[in-house]
Length: 231
Image (cartoon, rainbow, N blue to C red; front, side):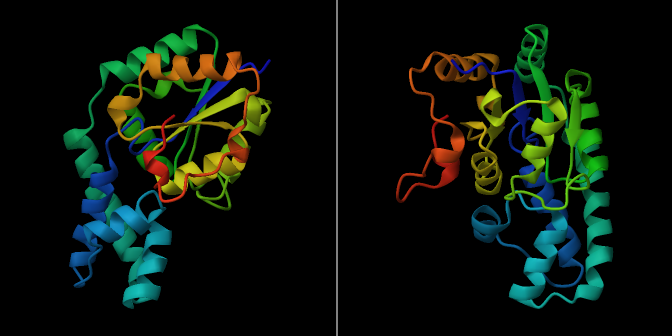
């Protein structure tokens, strides 16, 4: 029987409702030079990607000069920090979930496509930092999500096999990374879905199944977006 020993969390859209903060901060920076990522492009193509990857896509798709990447990225981080300080607050359901899971002996980690400064600042303002064994960012891996390197790195650091880990994700790029890692997937639509009961229910489902199917063997139903998958 499979035994789950760790829960790995994405950050944006899972623990922190920051997807719009990143979107708005980047667009504020792009607007200085007359560029924009519209809402449809954000939701279907850009959501969940590191800022550097977004800027590379904009260069290919909209002709954004590469010489502007560094300045735009710097301004985007400035605007993001301002939004974190203004909007990021603790959520009871997350503090309760993480405290219960940690007390029950589960290993906990974050794997985010954001830079370390942003991750640490958000976790500090959300009062969640002390629950995690460690936090991985896009600066800790060679390939960001949708590549599975971040989750494989977390599993290796914990000394666990993929089947011993459950990954909580919300967007297409993160979900593909989770699936490719071989861990078990709990897909959520928004931060309010991340509760102790939801996580424990998924763990129980995995551990009591007669034939547990690891995430890497799952396929998306035809015509369904990954973020709409049930856990």
